[in-house]
Image (cartoon, rainbow, N blue to C red; front, side, top):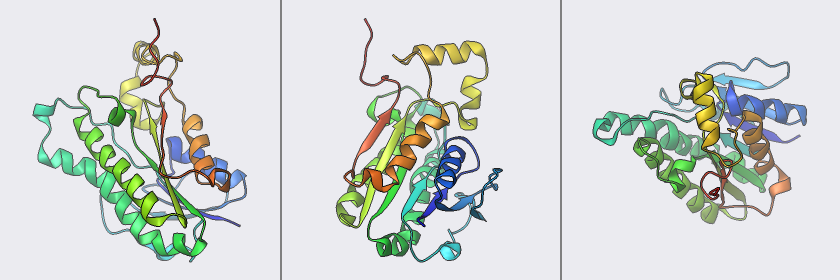
Length: 231
């Protein structure tokens, strides 16, 4: 049975991925701030990416996959972003991923055909106002993804998913009224926003052997926002 580590998995895309992976019979290990509430068996450790060193001692000695979900949506004008704001963005989105990947490397290497999936944002590819903090941190993450894909091929595959606004608890403030939801939908050529299940399906595909010929890629999932213009 394949062992998969999820960092964050108690809500949104992480929770949907956990449901999908356990339904497929994977042996799932979750590190998150709160234990996910689902009717399935999985191993859990409480961990906050902003506090303390990641403890990998609860993991088996062989990992087939790792998905890193933590992210932020802290939109501010550039002249109001402090150094502390930038550091927080990088800690959650970039340094946390670095720490977890380094801790899990021996287990991922031992598998010999493992996969790491990271989450970026469409704001790296497509400039957006007030996204300087998150776009900078996720841009670093995309660079890390491609660099590690080269460094660890063919033993470990590294890919990232770059979504636009998705209907998750993290985005609740931006989708807090029917008017806000409609405005967000209209910014997408498909006239809808992403759902957690959409992103989870891609994440579980990339962490599986079905994507064994894919590495070093950034998959933009944005309803066409960054590449399609309707006229």
